[in-house]
Image (cartoon, rainbow, N blue to C red; front, side, top):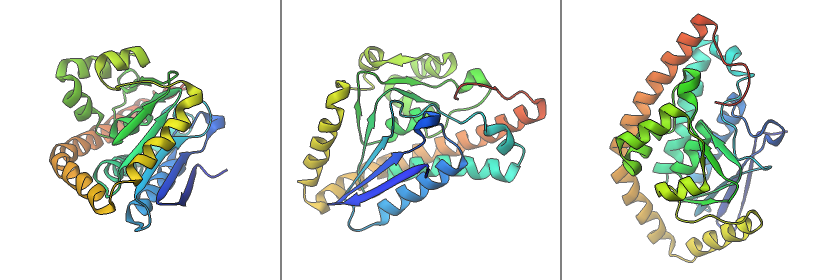
Length: 251
């Protein structure tokens, strides 16, 4: 089974995380495929809107911790994985096309950053967000350190990142991370409506708004991505030296 589905037509690239049996846990193959699909979609002149979604009942359970220890033994592979993680955020936030994300179930770790990266995110009432990296002696990715602080303030962001608190939809609403939640059975309809609304805009106008937004974000985002990458690589090196990788669950 390919870890990513990439379907295109009528101005839309629909990119789907496709490891439902593993709760869409993130491994090297998924990162490579997702970065490639997003980059290709952003360069495709026929694509005007990108949809990011997931197969199954969980958006993403975070890093695949069954595979991470083996990858961590290879410093080159670790650097490549970290680079791909941060490139995915660049494609989402700084690319030409707006990205609409739909989330049901858990979005954990790196998989929690991507809904924050998207221009528009639709949250199912079953959605749950969590950044447990600190509890695993790891470090967040995808600009989460900057995005949460920018939206919530430094103290609230640090509390969420250090505590690993599970944020249900009521908490996400209270924090202002999402403006509304949707019943599971209406999520797809709402997604189609949002995409259709964007496609009714003139293509040049849609791209212009995205370019201006990207220009505003680039400097602080790149600083966060670089700092996160450095800390992620250092954290993996420490865990490898100690032989202390977590054995179960997702990061």
